[in-house]
Amino acid sequence: MKSLKKQLIFWLVGLLTLAAVMAGSISFYFAWKEASSLLDQQLSEIASSVDEGSQLPAMQSRFERKNAEEKKQGFIIQVWIGNESGRSSRPDFKLPRAATPGFSDIWFRGLKWRAYTMIYPDRTVQIAQQEDVRYDIALHSAMRVLFPFALVIPISWLLIGVVVSRLLQPLERVTNEVKNRDVTSQALLPVEDVPQEVAPLVLAMNDLIVRLSAAIELQRQFLSDAAHELRTPLAALQLQIENLSQSHSRDDLDNRIEEMRRGSQRASHLVGQLLKISRYEAQGKSAMSGRIHLNTVVKACLADFIPLADHRHIDLGMTQDDDAMIMGVAEDMRVLLGNLIDNAIRYTPEGGKVDVSLRVANQEVVVEVLDTGSGIPESLLPRIFDRFFRVAGQETEGSGIGLSIVQAIAQRQSARVVLANRQDGHGLSARVIFSLAV
Image 1 (cartoon, rainbow, N blue to C red):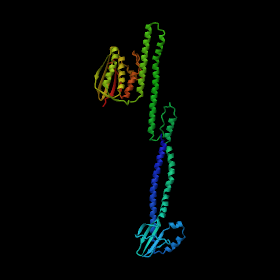
Image 2: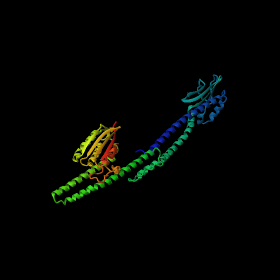
Image 3: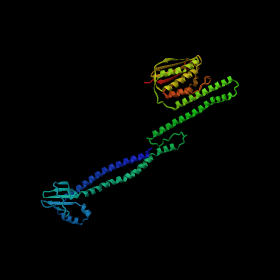
Image 4: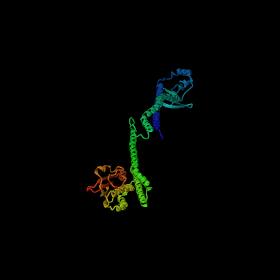
């Protein structure tokens, strides 16, 4: 895992150093050119101040008194009168005469000289300086320009480290708070003094904490409700097991075993419903969503419940069958519609009627299940999707989870579920509204 702080320091120091080196190089180049230009100007000014060579004897005398380093750094002044042999400011040392006036480079005895020549009608004056000497002078002049850069760069490294550490302190505080908080803590992370660029991350983490808190609370409530609902069938089973020992006849024993079988089936059905609601509420929108021919799903659900409807002498059928294609998961759709049809059959008295219709209107698909049961009191309709909620006075056995599963699947599939009493006062209308697939 890479450190953001180290990367920031590394890149800032690197970029600053690169910029300083480039700026120093450019400054060095211009300082070098300026120093060379001044030295050239010095050559031309000396050349213009020399006459027919009257200064040369005195210069030769001074040259003899200089040390080796001073002799190397001095200028050579040469004068030619007409066709006479030239005279020089250095005894026994004469450079070749340049053929043209102005600046020129002369190689002599393996050394390069920079010369400036002035040609008069009666004489020629030439001033020269060793190129190595000019190089040293220009280099020392340019190096003085680089000194501030060499001093500032190490100081800037230290300042970058301090500034980056200070800027990242709010982020480090958030990190330490997350690291040190208890696993049960649901408090939001502080966003005060957090950099603007980091604030979206902290806000996203706070949103995650809120959603996790809601999920944890949902699971806690689920476990509490499940324990409460399972207590009754398990207690009944335990009581029935104890009663087996008191059976005195085969018929009595068979009756008690049949009661245990039904109680076991109820408990098994409840556990199955609990697992379904847990799975659907824990998952978000399904990644397996695809195009579904809803007519096929509806007809398959009707076929599944025909035996139950026949057993209870209920007329189960389909009144409208528009062709409809939606996006979703076929198995989820089958569970959703199956729960609605199952509820309608169970809460409809024998001899009643359950009608299922599928119609398309305004880019929406509506599946409606109509029964001829007793309906639901208007005051209780807002609670109909609560887990384990059952309308008091109903004789039909149930877990109170079926409609909760319907609601969870609908939310997962971006559908809407609307339950309402029929306008004629004879039963309940359950509608599921989907978006038509494009």
